[in-house]
Length: 303
Image 1 (cartoon, helix red, strand yellow):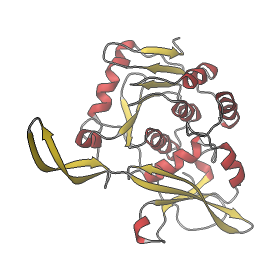
Image 2: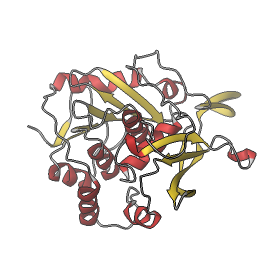
Image 3: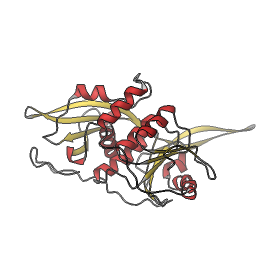
Image 4: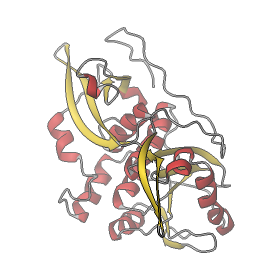
């Protein structure tokens, strides 16, 4: 994330640094899990104990843009997420929705320090560079990541082609053995899922199967946005030399986000949707589903 050459002069916040992921050695984001009382039933036995559950809280994303010499705040989204890596989530969301074209468009990202106490830590403000224009009406028209938005598949694909910086291009091959080993590596590196069993994960891998980056969240889309946001803030997009593994199914929304980040291969533990397959074919992306230890289906990009 680079400082703008003009405009406000407050210090730019440094992004969270990106480091290679190591199984069983990843820090758990503060507040990612909470302990709650539970009645445990096993056959005829009942006992009361405490259990760790994944945290789910709302996050409001605001865009702060320069308009006629003054800063104007726009609330653009509220998502239910697991606290942690909020700046990455906000950056990744705005990038994959086409609001910002790169890290240079972002001047600063910070949690809002004003407002009611109950919203503390749950509002992130993304300050755009002074020269970056923001049209709230255009953003509203172009947000199409939710499955219930009512936009047809053909329209969604055309919108993606318009806002996508460039179709993903990878010049590597991945062996079947490498793919088969990915789910175990992802599970081994999920610190919060291991304790709660309640989170999705997105893992960024090298073609050789090395885990480069992992993010967890109650939302599948949020987990991938956090990965992409981390890459954006580190000026590592397009990520054409990587592939991404998601812990659930492969929806159109996840394909869209991977395409925007230039990631040429999306691998899912679960099933893909029809529009995900169509989009992958249209944009030359590799899409793998139903990945198990000994089997998987290649829906697009088998070459």
